Each structure stands twice: as C-alpha cells, then as structure tokens.
Image 1: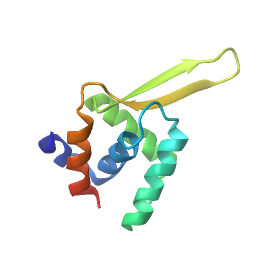
Image 2 (image 1 turned 180 degrees about the horizontal axis):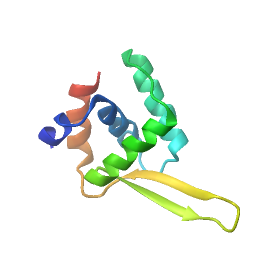
Image 3 (image 1 turned 135 degrees about the horizontal axis):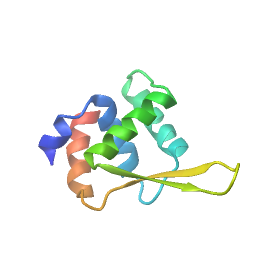
Length: 102
C-alpha cells in the first residue's frame, strides 16, 4: 500500500486523506473544504475546484476513490458523491498518508 501512495502527487495524497478521514459519501464541496483545511495547515498552495475535479477523476481511474453521479430530474442538475472504495484498506492507507502528507 505504501508503495502506491508514494507514487501519488502531493495534492493527490492530501485529497485521499480528506476523503478517507470521513466515512460514507461526501459531496465535492465537503471534500474541497477538508482538502483546503489540510493544505492551509500544512502551508501548501491552494488549488481551484476545477483542479480538484481533475484530481478526483485521476484517483477514480486509479481505483482509490469512487464517484457516484445521480440525475435528479429534468433541469434540476446532478447529485455527485465521493466515497472510499471497498478494495482499499483504510487503516493501511491512512497510516501511509500520515507519514507523507504533513
């Protein structure tokens, strides 16, 4: 697990930590808020919502997180949730991230 986490970019590591520290589904706004807090506390540069969306898409591609999109109805938009995958061991991932993020 540690080997895979080491290969991720610093922003991806922080994003993973912000997703995996809370259980269950989170909206992108909740993830961005947690991501922004971690970045501020560690003294790193902030990123935009667009960049964060690209990072989430990459982590989905790697199988680290899952995104769920549900259409509500005509002209009402789409609900979007981000949550940890079942295949990744949470404790091992969080232990690897704590050593690398801050």
